[in-house]
Image (cartoon, rainbow, N blue to C red; front, side, top):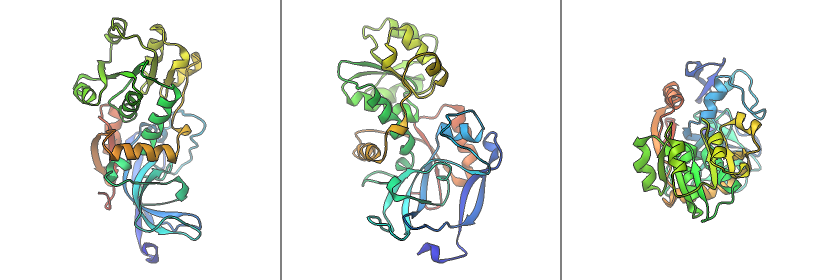
Length: 316
């Protein structure tokens, strides 16, 4: 087994101070050993999420995000089980898995409680599987929070981003009519996915006011005044869910349902829909572990289509 070699070395991304992408470093360490009830995963791909850079930059976040220095980085991953600790049942070396492990995912190897893992279904690439944990759970929970039906007209903000593109597709699967805000270069993609694109910016309020379809629900993934616009258009507060505008949630009785309410069962459903090509999660760009700073610079710029992914030497 891989852990039999005491000289085996693994890499991981760490930060020892808060700041921009320049604080991210790749350090060497011995390959970790799985304790009883744990498995060792050889990571192939690790998705980049905006919350990652909010954490390493030191931005204020919800109290559930505990931070201490030095810290590992990343949450989403996919890979193969390389070893199992004692008392582990139902998992074998070589199983393809994905999931999330906060502050640990961007590494060659990690140890994890297998109850947090989901099997990668046949037909799903490691790149997509390694990107789906946060966006899949968040999109699922956001859509479920509004109990959408075919009678609904829904606005999804940031519909070409990682969370937004899954949110919009899951909303459309309920039969609802879905508007999605995005830059014009993303409109063709949204149309292909069954989403009706709108350009964000100063013209958006008039586009919605003059539409023959009256909004009944809003799923906000980016903030930027989406909640205030929805309220001005007469959308009831209890039909608005925002995962991005914390300040608006303080001012208005709108929902803030995110990924914490969805778990491995929901992730397995999303993964199968992706494997079946019922849903699509575009990969914006792929970066090696040593290029982690460039990956986050692209994420911070805010123009990615779908997901940015980091791969290790075992990535495929």
